[in-house]
Length: 433
Image (cartoon, rainbow, N blue to C red; front, side, top):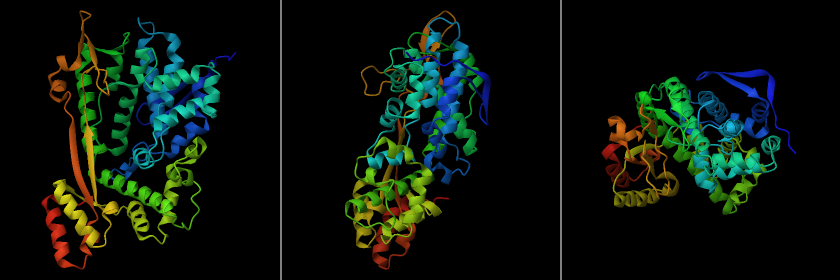
């Protein structure tokens, strides 16, 4: 029978720019941090290509994961000895908080779309497979890895435990908003974390917020709204994502066509063949991918060479506000006529966000609402009490942009063709600075 790990002889601390200190008192948490799979997160940026827009955004999923753990640890301190909180769930929720992002790949979202993989599948594989993480989790109990996976997957029976990691106001979101705002240098993501933690209370179906803390929650919701549109969906970042995605698509297409790469594709072969193993996945990080991009700048294939140069040297596509689909089709034909392959050089990109939603039973993605606890004990959903939140509740904002290589268009010799292309693009042509 597994013997549960206890407390460290001496508390360990990580100096952190967002939370000042991250405190580790449990041997289990300390040993999980030291695993190969968790240390890999140091080599994966939290914000993917955002560093090409906000140069300070070099922080990693490692630091974010520690931050989520720390906020969760502090929530548990607030919940201690209160009704509905089961102290026996403490190590489970701390482990889930620390490991919630363990399965993310390099440049996660672009990577997943191109190769048809899901980081959640790899999170589960790392938790339950032949890994250092699994070996350490099993020391807490043979069924402990499965419980951690269930919390992260939102299928665990204790809804309060799940809500601490995954809800509309959880440790994950609170850390990434503050951390991303800090490292991008913007003020939009700032809100009063201390106040929110002080007014959180455990209930059977999830954490609630004392009504006296409503204004702090309003600030949090608006911070999230602003961060998505000013940082996460920034058009420069999206342009870099578009090019990154096209690099991976081009390399995959070439591989499947039997193209002879100069450099052996050790880290990509199983990906291109659609048979990536957990071991291959763990070996991939952003340093490895960027090494290949450097190498591919020397390839014979002009498209792959050009796209890699654009990404590494930040020679990004320009963008225009979305034109009619018929115009996009025309533009695609003109580019092809000019010898510019629209498959890789003309991209419609869409960004969409729903900043807050109330509970809608039966929908594909049911969102647990943020509930307020009134002084008389009544529970009220946030948007019923807050005019600010009501104004944006359930309202999805979507933005469409058209990305293209302005420099290649300028080089088109056929002046009539160039004129036709520019006529379509000129409406809202925007330079990426």
